[in-house]
Amino acid sequence: MLKKTSALIVLMTGLLSSSAVIGEEYRGDIVVVETIHHQSQIVLGGTVVPAKQVTIAAQLPGRVEFIAGEEGDSFADKTILIALDDDELLAKRRSALAQMANAEAALRNAGVQFNRELVSPQSRNSMSGMGIPGMFDQMFTNNFSNMMGMTDSSATRGADLYSRGIGIEQARSTHLQAASQLEQVDAKLRDAVGSAPFEGVIVEKMVEVGDTVQPGQALLKFADTESLQIQIEVPARLMPGISQDEILQAKLDVRDTPVKAKVAQVFPMADPIRHTVTVKLDLPLNAPAAPGMYAEVRVKDFSTAPQLIPVIPESAIVQRGSLPAVYVLNMQGNKEMRAIRKGQKLPDGRVMVLSGLRGGERLFNNPRPAAVAQSK
Image (cartoon, rainbow, N blue to C red; front, side, top):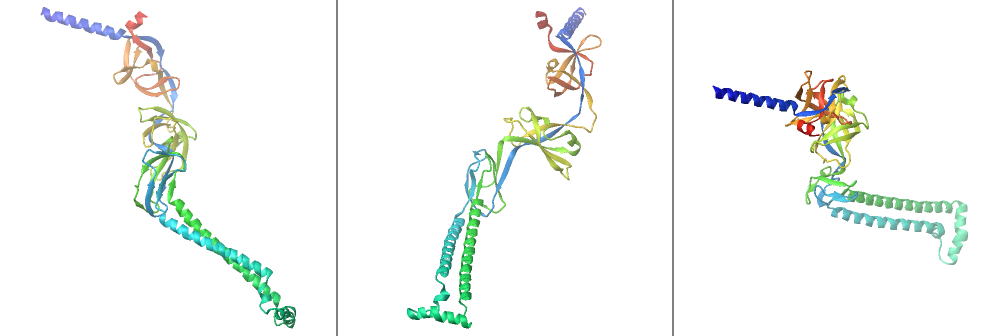
């Protein structure tokens, strides 16, 4: 019986000493919990996307002959990324060039014939012989025929000039037709290659060298991964909380990195099925993100009334395992450890408390062990 009593006394003494340690473990400056009017916010999940991205597709049928690189390779603006076999097109171009040369020769010949008709009309020489008979025809026979109404030299000459002029127009039209065919072939040759429209990276490759493709088939995706955005789908009721160029709080999936994102684009129409509006936000340069990553954005919910939210200095929070906690000075003047649920961090260093505290309560700021406090 004596042994049990002694053991009980030792146990109670240990509990009392332990309670005293807990009661005096932390000391610090006393601060009063303040409250602020806060508009409730909704966290929306989104995806990191490139600010500029294009899908290069085949414009004509053919076989893939060249691909510049693999996913992740960077290229400068106007670099050829992919090319199709163009042997058939080159043969057509040579044929078009030959037609072009023939048309140019025909146009020059038509011009020469017109000039000859101006200088030496065929109508004047058609009735002329050689030597003195020819001179007689020019001086008497032709003039007499015109006077008698048997012929009209001026009308014949005008018809010959008109005919030569028509020859020039026809030759010019043939030349233009040949030039058009050459332009068509050159356009197809340009379509046979896909070039980088800006400096960027290949993010996805859909074909390999040797594949046969058809018009409209996607070949590869090319994007500028230096300038990134977050794309979110915002319910229509939350759209009053978003405006152009507004700065919103976001969080990246990489180590829960907080960032500030600027509203860059608000789509003018809502999705008729999901009733959401697509919004894109610019990420800061060198943000630790990559296309396809998950991100979260906080959007104000103006469909609810503002609430009074307690705010405390971040220095008043201590970690107890995985739970944040504070030391409160209760109404009896005793220290009380209380777990809290943290909310958004404010720019002035204070933290909103979603649960665990009320406005007007007193707590210890910068809590520290009592032994340390006494030594100071």
